[in-house]
Length: 176
Length: 150
Image (cartoon, rainbow over all chains, first blue to last red):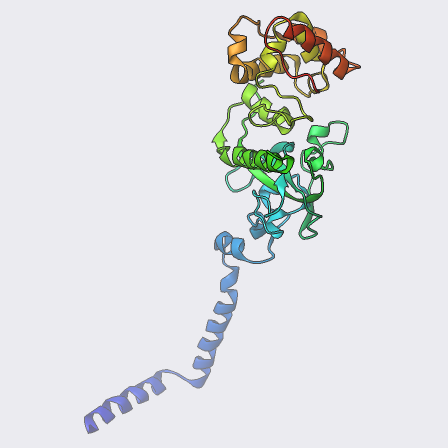
């Protein structure tokens, strides 16, 4: 036991000879400054950003956000907020047999996808998650490319409830 | 089958058709043009909407049998006002007839050409219903005819 005491005493005295209170404070300061600067280093944080609520990046892949990439020309209430999903109608509603079909760009893979916007019909308007995006939409003179149309007009019950966005395929550039 | 049951059945069939559409790699051409410019109203199987949107399946090839039928098809609002070029419209109509009315086409109806489309489509019909009715009556006297209630 006395030997163990001597070893600890020697190492403590040796440390006290080599360091000072000032050097300890300086090291601590360096450590704190370094820790504060760590988030500024150029580290790829896109994966974490995608999961962060409310951030622009995550919204691109969130079916309950207007910024979801395949909602690029949606005008109405998102069925994903109304008891359905981004591509299926809520219970008690029927998909419209006629629809707006266009293309949306997926920033995830850089490709354009063909998207069918079907309205879900037969119940009063859902009222949740209203979105109005108009990429590649055209005015009323070309009805098939206009998203202000109530596509429930061809349903037996033409009440509009919400809209879905169904992926049909990958669009290829037109042949010239 | 009651009206409500028929509507439910149609909705179920439509939901299945849409859900069954695979996210496939398409190629620019008549199939993609059909999807982007025609399918929104005429449907994934060119079946139309009963009483609202005329079918192209089992119908378009029958119109192609007579000059009056061809004239009608190229002057209806969907063709006359289409954003497609004359050549694209000819190509997509031929693709639809081949895909959804092949048996009728096999009896010898000629495909549309871009020149024929250009000659006729720029003079849209003023009375679609009356013209269709007359054309369908004439076609039914020489074989199978499309439905006339549109």
